[in-house]
Image (tube, rainbow, N blue to C red):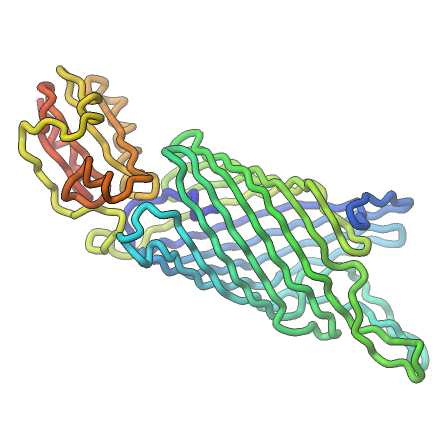
Length: 423
């Protein structure tokens, strides 16, 4: 979602994103199926989680990412209080933005990002004690109840789809999957997990404040474990379903994202539980809160790299004195005023940068008229109707007080618009 909302700077071939997230959640409720279970004893689990995120994305559409969590867990019940802290399991992904890789032929399509990776068992795993049937005293039970790690490698596979809806709205959909690649040291076999998320976003203040709301469904398959079958003589180990594992969850997650600068942003998120259907009896989370800080740093060359959303690099000086070639544009040009017509799209990063620059300039020059033409959903035919022979964004037309074209600027040259303004 961060990549979907990140406007960033304009033209770097590499973008490094660094993030730090803190989350808090607690649980003092047990569910059996969809029903809340009334407890007659104290039960509470508290989790503080910090995650360091880093990703590197190339302008070609390829990228890598990693997430390393650190957690603190405290559990309180009628008998005692236990706690644990340390690293969690490290996630590593390779990803590809299919639309960016395919280039201009798919200009304006929603972004399709496909990821694959692994989770390494870097966090401590607390082994559940097996039923003891041997001679002598049984081994002591574990003094901790919750694992920061899962003790096994996992395979990750993700698909994300996102795009704009006009100038200020956007949408996002994703499917995340993770599958265990083996069993933990005590024979515990975690069930596979799937998550589906659908979100909508609203740019309340362009380049400053964005709000989004997501609905997320999560499914976990039932895990299995090894136990002694005491009905046989001698008792033998037998694999059986883990009685309190798996189920379905549905949450709503509202988020507010603040962009302090083009590089620095922060997000504030709540995860609100809506529905639960768990197998066996499980503790479920109350409303959780998350705060994150993200920094995006542009690396690599900026001028020479190809950009599928950027029009031809040289300024196209249309014939001075031309009238607008489209009636819709002609109706917006104001006689007696200098009019700037900005052609752009929400999926075009240089267009977003130009829009911000024009918005600042507009406050300094109230004598000028600014018109924005949103081409986010234009097909090639419509693009040729308004901008014949151009083939991309951004484009800025400058019309004089007589309503005739003074200059047409295309690509990176739009940012030099001040020197083309008539007196």
